[in-house]
Length: 383
Image (cartoon, rainbow, N blue to C red; front, side, top):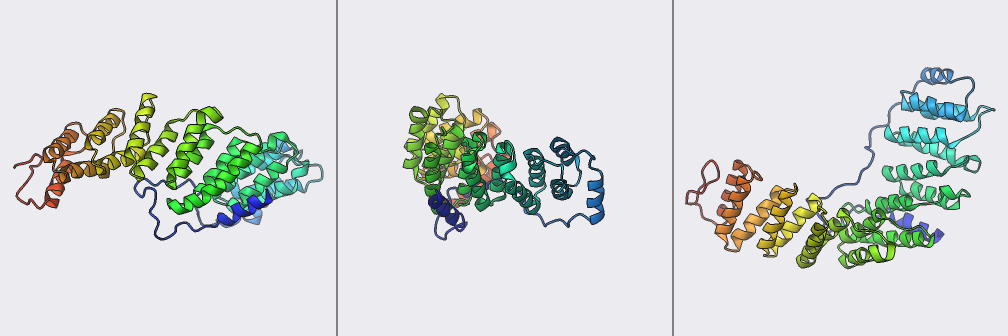
């Protein structure tokens, strides 16, 4: 276990991108959630701290302190109040005030105070009853702050805890998987480097007897798909139901359709797309855009058009880049009437505006070098 953690922590410092590797999708890349890095606010004044301490009830119990911390308007005062209370002779430490404090400090993006509050709780961990909720939230917020070393420290504390309720659960591993994969920022090689660590953690999870859920398995599928190792992603997909008893959901199919489209494996993507639609599931917008574009560029315009209209009826309208790609591929293939018809149908069905239609038709005809063709104000050709 120690070897695994050392390897995980070393790899967490991998560069955000490596030159020469194409991102999984630069158009639809979604950066993972992180607390915004704001300048550190000035510490509260000594008078404000004294006033906050003086406002605490004389008989201070953990539930009363937790309530006081929750109602304190200035989050910068939470750590001084918590530290003061711990020095009171009659005060017995309890996870509840720490839990309130770290949630509020994380929400306020006060990482330094958040880290100190966690360190206080860790120093008292052997005497804290039922530390499970606190440890789970601490790990989650460290992942959100992007502090993987701290998150894995909490993970080791959870594994060593004598309280069974504090041991890692499926949500723990999901948070760690997601934090590891967020390091790639769309770079396929970096994603695959981290997938080796995610796979090792996944094996650890299974050895601990923790059954994975669909959400956790989806992270594996996404990681392999984003690193363009689609055979590994498909292997996990095919194991979900028979091996783990988990039903693939819309996210599972979307990751696979997106990844297969990025690899140009449109036949496989089409099979999965039809399977998910048969279950009444809708792919995400990035998956729709990538899939329709891949079909168009593969010369499968009929399937691309069918998918585009089916998604439009379901409320998933492909973006302007995808619409342009489909029309332009039809035009380049010599199917000018089909390209013109499709562009007009999109305008008639309010998928594109008259202005976008005019720009679209003008661009494809300019690209073909036919400067004599023109369109009117509604995009109607005059040729």
